[in-house]
Structures are given as C-alpha cells and as structure tokens.
Length: 71
Image (spheres, rainbow, N blue to C red):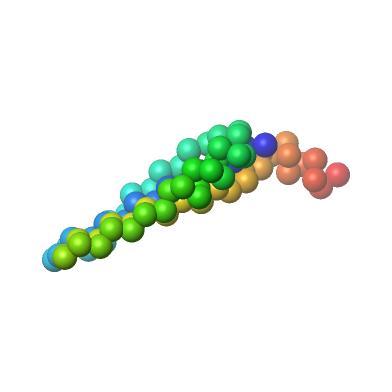
C-alpha cells in the first residue's frame, strides 16, 4: 500500500491575496507518514503576516488493490 503525505503552506501578506503551496510526497511507511503529519502543524501570526502549515497522510490505493477489493 502507498500513503501520500500532503503538505499545504498558506501565507498572506498585507495587500496581497493568500498564496497556497501544496506538495504531495508518496511513501510506503505508514508510521513515518503519520509521524510527519502530527509533527507538521505550525501557524505564525505577526503584525501583517500570516503563515500556516497543514499536513495530512492519506492511503492511496493502486488499481490492483482496488480490483482485489471488488472480487
């Protein structure tokens, strides 16, 4: 099975729209994926500046694994 770690960085500066940067990293190690998901979660608030990092670990089934479930 493959897991996908998704990391979203959101930043906002005065006079500009929010910007989101998304990165997805495939991994086969569930424990590592869950550890990173729990440890990445940060918000920064300063006068006129906002930054936030969110992460999530999701199971990504391949076509073969989906076929096995249907049988």
